[in-house]
Image (cartoon, rainbow, N blue to C red; front, side, top):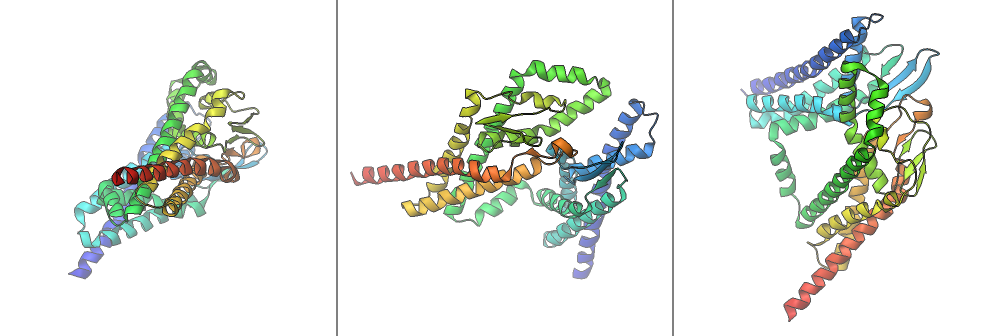
Length: 387
């Protein structure tokens, strides 16, 4: 009986992974074929549209590409991929996780999740290999870990539910761990939430430039719809890059360029409407943006240190809080930036060395301020209790 149930868990994991591959790819392929047909691609073949759909599907998993584009076989790479596309596999894989939970007993769900994630990763790697052409070659080595990570976390969300996963994690933490987790969350929500507000404000202030770029591109109705989808899918990348600017590290939009609170050096840019939000030069507002990062880190530092007593313990909490937030910023910028077709745009996004040299001190300063406020507050409570 146990062997039969284990075999059922294995088969369900494999079948749900293959189903997720089809459910995720087919809608992308249909939309691509419709856009290809409506665009009047008389010189192309339907196979080209299928390849394009496959590349979009791989990009949704953050699998990059090596390029050798005609004319002249220009060599480059593409790693600047819209993070928003990831909602496609996330929803599909989460639904597969729910189906696994509905058909597999609790005791075999972990095994099914591993089989599900492994099968999906292998399928993604096989698809990357099959979709390679002389001009565009998906990075097969990236498909395996990307597929497993997407399937594992999205599938776990569907199987167990996000609330159960979070409560299971926090339930095992000590009081210090819970405060630290709450502090990190507070800093992240504040930093990236306010970065979203900054981005929205700059887009609004440059709205005429934004709309003029949409007009100049003259993509037609189908192209305009696809361009808007691309802009929306790129908004998470933009928010993370704004957070890098707010944190003092700055970003590059091309080789030998820099946009930071203290320096703006921009060269010729591609005609992508979202780039209309970029500053054209230094300003007081741009210089004051690091206050956001310091304040967000101070809030998190205060929350992280408030559950422990003594300056030594609070200082340790502050350091851990800063370290975790820097790691988050580095990780997010790893996905938000990257090469864009090579050439002049081979460097787009935040420099990791600048994050360490500029963002780390600012976040540490804010966290120390929050820890100091917590220490002073705890001393005040002690004095009041003694009275």
